[in-house]
Each structure stands twice: as structure tokens, then as C-alpha cells.
Length: 482
Image 1 (tube, rainbow, N blue to C red):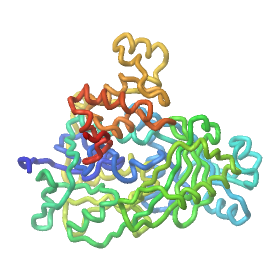
Image 2 (image 1 turned 60 degrees about the vertical axis):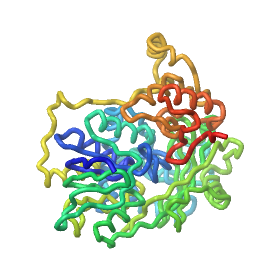
Image 3 (image 1 turned 180 degrees about the vertical axis):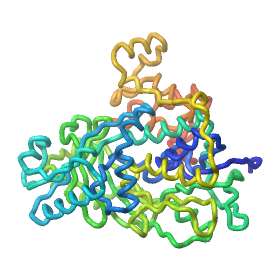
């Protein structure tokens, strides 16, 4: 165990919620740390297995934390992403009804949206649906249009938040599994991991599916999380004209249901179902799950899904809280422990607003002082070469020839992109870290063309032998020495 380290605030969990809070705290005169059991940001749970839909706020119950933070967060997103250099697009969304009963539910959803403060929603009929989304099933009778819905590059968002925090002096402890909380006289005084003892006066529990486990360390067993698995399938970019916005069926009590939606990177995803999982580590995809989400997606698209165009599938575990709402409050048992738990959908949309709320909660306890504006680094994530205009690309190649060498043909990712990511504020030195930051290996071939080249670049830039390079976490070696 390393020498003891002292901080004001420790955040447990480096997903979208933890990193959003870290970014807010990095603008203050505080010593802040983020602890995560994985080797990189957004490697665990919901931030990893997420399509990046920024919901408009039509679905949560009025007055709930989900409703409040969803609408507030959605309104913050355009500026939020602009400040971080992350791609975001307002697309709108359709929630589609296929019978009279579902149309009645659409009307109720619109009433809920109005109560939540969602602007400019309307019920539209089949002709209007097909005019904007011609591939939708012609049996559709009506849809709730939610213009404020958007899509974001979720992985690069979390990475940008973490890197902004890092350059502004937040310390990240990866591969640190929290084993206990330090508590003295019913007040939290630190965190113990399998590698470090870290002292602090505030702990923010953003551990996702493990948030309940952290709460139990404080003697609090009042909150339960039910793991729910959702499966999703990614289609080739040649299918990018299937839909231009997220298209849902009418939601059920289990969630928003299957959705077909475009991603910010040009592919189309359909999913996800909602299956209670006995194993919170089970992120397998199944034949039964595929059939379920495919049949529901085909209802939306009138059987317009070409199975040959499906690249791959993935699943994730949602941290569904017992109350059905976000759980954000200081522990009743231990002062200084702020629990941010049960953050399922619309967690991505809500993240900026949740971070502001938690910041204000902490400020009441620490009387924080903001840094001088001149000492805050307004960091933006480095733009990918393919997203630059022609003049910018030529200039970059003249400065660094590595940007003229394509490594990933499917996604047009250059060697310069990869090297830049390896040497970024939070180094991306595993295959999945590079995949999330640059999209190398994310395309049609799923890395079969670029794998060997990427491994050689990592080894050259870091000195790590190829046989020791990991896919993601410990013991995930890509190459096994014979």
C-alpha cells in the first residue's frame, strides 16, 4: 500500500456522473481525487454500454429528480459539449404509437412532458412521421415529437470531462478497488482501496451498479439496486439513412423500451431490452435477447433491418434503484458521504445538472473558493483528424506526418490520432481506451485490419511489450506469449 494521501473530496467512480462532478470541482481551490476499479474512464457499467441519447425529459414522473435534472441537463448540453470540444447534435425524437391505446398513452406522455417543462412537444400523425422518417412502419398512427432530444459522443464526453479535470489538478487513481470507508465518530474521513489509503472530508459515491455496496460500508442498507441488463446492436454506417432521430415505441413500466437511433459517428443502433440480471457482471449478449430487440426494432422500421449490416452487439447493466428515481443525498448514517445512486436513464442527459447540484451540496459543507479565472485551463479534447476541414488537415499533416497515415480504414483514424491519445492527460494505452477516445477498431471490421498496427504503435510509444498490452483491464492481454 502506498503512502497515505490527503484530499478534500474523493469521488468513487469515473463514469459520466463522477467525471462531471470532478470537472465542476476542478474549478475550485480543492484537492480532489477520483477512484475507479478499472484502468480507464467509462470502462465499467452504464457509461461504457451507452448509445449517447440525451433525452428531452418527456418520460420521468413530474417532480422527480429524474424529471428535474433531465430537463435542466438537456438544456445545458449544447454549451457543455462545445466547451469540452465534444460532438453533440440536437435531433429530436419520436415516440410512436401503433394503436388507439398507445395514442392515449402518447397524450398522457405529452401532458407529463409539459409538466416537466419540456418545450415544443406535439402529437403528430402518420403523414408527418413518414415525411420526416420515411423508413418508419406505415402502420404507425401517431407519434409524440420531442424536439429537444439529442445525441452525444458519450465515450469522448466522459474522457473530455476526465481530461479537463486532470489538467486542472484532479488526481485519478485507476485500478483501485474500494474495499472500505474510513469513518470516525459517524463522519467519513477517507477511503481504503486495494492499493491506497486516501484521507478526505467528503466522499461522493458515484459507483453505479456498486453504489449500494459503498453505502453498506457506511452501515446503510436502506437502498437497493436491481441490475437490469439491456442488449444493443450496431449497424454499419451504410444504414445511416434508416432514421435521423431516436425512434421509440411507447414506454412500459420497465423503461423506455426498444429504440432505433443514429449515433453521432454515423452508425445506427437498435436496443435495448430490460432483463433483471442475477449477475451484475453479466454483459453477455444472447440469442433470445437479440430476437427480442430485433423483433421490436422491426416493428418500428417495418422489417427494414438487413441482418448482414449488423456489425456487433453489446450489453450493459443499468443500476435501477428501488425507488424508481435518482437517489442523491447525504448518508443518514455517516456525515460527509454523498450518495449519487440509482442513476439509470436519463442519467447521461442529467449528468451536467446532477454535477451542479452535488457541487452546491458540497459547497454548503466546505465553503469552497473558486480558482482565479487565469489559473483554470479551459481544456478541450483534441479533435479527430477526420472531423477537421481540408485546410486544417493539410496544416496538421505538414506539422506531423503521422496524421497522414491511416491506421483504421473503417473509421479513418490516423496514426497521429492514436499517438495523441496515448500521450493525452489521461493516457489511453489499452485497446479499448484507444477505441473509446479515437474510435480505432470501432468500425465494420471491428479491428481486424488495424489491430496489429495499433499494438505496435502502443508498444513503440509506451515501451510496453506487445505481449503485455491489454484490451482493457488486468489479465486481458491481447497477445499471449508462447
